[in-house]
Length: 99
Length: 471
Image (tube, rainbow over all chains, first blue to last red; front, side, top):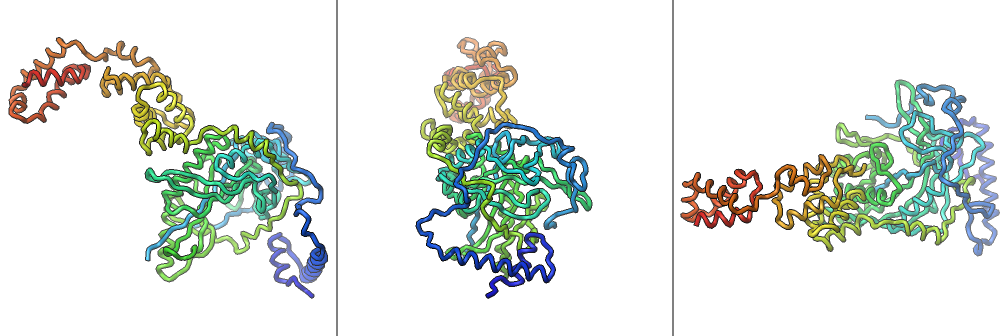
């Protein structure tokens, strides 16, 4: 049974800024369906006695001291930028809203 | 039926660390564009975030100062959206399991205490800054990765004044505990307001979120405008749309950002690069032990122990710099309430920005000495103010200033009597009026004598001699 609609795939693709052709869209829709099928399979497991986790490896967050170490010059930072001006990355104008 | 306003606030406060939240790059403000950027801030492939211990410590201190529960376990999530000042395409934030939950802010409005509950405090990284020029936008990533705490309130605030008072108190607390410099202009303390209206007794209305409020005055005006706009809409048969609005300080109005409908679909999920953050009890206790006495506690103490007025207690406790100076002066004086008047009316008049440090030439002890001279009626309030101006300019002791400027009061009865006799003789008409029962002219005589003696005559002595000569 298909559970993900083409519209949902389009919505998610737009959020991820992906452009999909009709064929790609259908392929991805089938993949996502398969992922959900797999999740259904996992749901059959009894996990009542298992603590929820967000990571597969039982690690605590690593912490570091608040000490400045400089690694890049501005020139290096901007080196790969397709366009730069006045020491800043230059991109097509993006302003949301307005008066 | 009348309308009720419901306001909840979200405050982003930059933590005063040296480095960024997830990398060792400097987080200093005001550098040349893109000079505080490393591989992590620029979101280069293959880099990993490593948490700044001091950022966690400061977030915990903020939570402790605000009465929050510090969570033993919290988690970082990715909040995804595309914008050029967010190089990774996601912001690392906390969604499902924030570092702090609950808490409250207590503050005064017109002398009355109000309480606003907090929902949570979570940690996150700041984005970079974009500026716009012609058909280009220019991106500076210096700010990207600066540690932030977002303090989210419950919708407990009912007026624009309450919202502003809440923010002032919150800012004061964060500055007291040295976790945020509270600089609104530089953006280290930023506020978004969620505003809705409803008829009394009805469920919550649809809210609008107002962003870009970078002064307490703007917060107040923007909320006032927004409340009026929503009520007009509803009374005109329309409805409020849930949206993000911006405040234009020039027009005093809010306007819709017209963002796309899916703009808020952030698809949070746990960041696989960051394992859960564990805060044990020992660490929490260390953070709690660092908390100084907070402005609210000081305010109460000033009122109860020293009889300071509620309004003055708020002024005196608003910054640690002023509070510490006041307390040092008050503790060394005979009348702390009198000292509170000196600090509120005179010291704060000559100090331009008390939060940058008072930078006074005179000490708290010297101010206490001056106040005590008035208390002991050694000098008049008027002369004390003249002495104060000299203290501001030179930092000299009040006693030394009195001698040098010849301001010591004239206690010699003979000299004062001569002056009083002359004034009475020069003003026979007024003297007659006084004797006829018009006792109000006493004030006239006192004024004349004080003027003749350049304010140096002891007022009690003057009054006594006048009464005698006019009898």
